[in-house]
Length: 121
Image 1 (cartoon, rainbow, N blue to C red):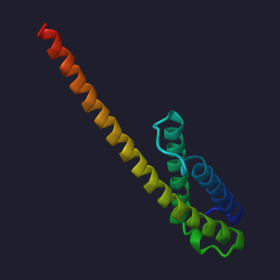
Image 2 (image 1 turned 90 degrees about the horizontal axis):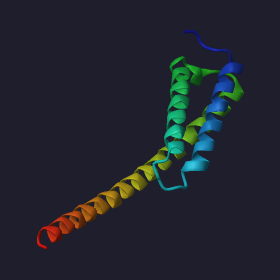
Image 3 (image 1 turned 90 degrees about the vertical axis):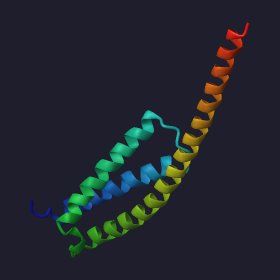
C-alpha cells in the first residue's frame, strides 16, 4: 500500500486525536464499572490505534507537511495520557475484581452456613 496524501493523513490523525480526546475525557477520570459503553469505547479505541498504526507503518512520521507533524505531536501526547489512563483503569478494574471476589467468598460462606443450619434442624 502506498502512502496517502498529506490531507488524508492529517484527517486520519485529527480524527484519531479527537477519538482519543473523547475517550480520555469520558473514561479516564472514572472508575471501571464494566458497562457495555466501556467495552464499546475500548473497541473503538483499538480500531483507532490500529488505523494510526497502519499509517505509521507507511512512514507518515517523515512527512514534510506541518499539519501532519502537528497532529503527530498531539497524537504522541495523547498516547502518553492514554498510557496513564489505562494504568489507572487497570488499577480500578483490579480493585473492583478484588471486591467482587471478597463478596463471592462471603456469599459462599453465608450459603454454606444456611445449608449447615438447615441440616441441623
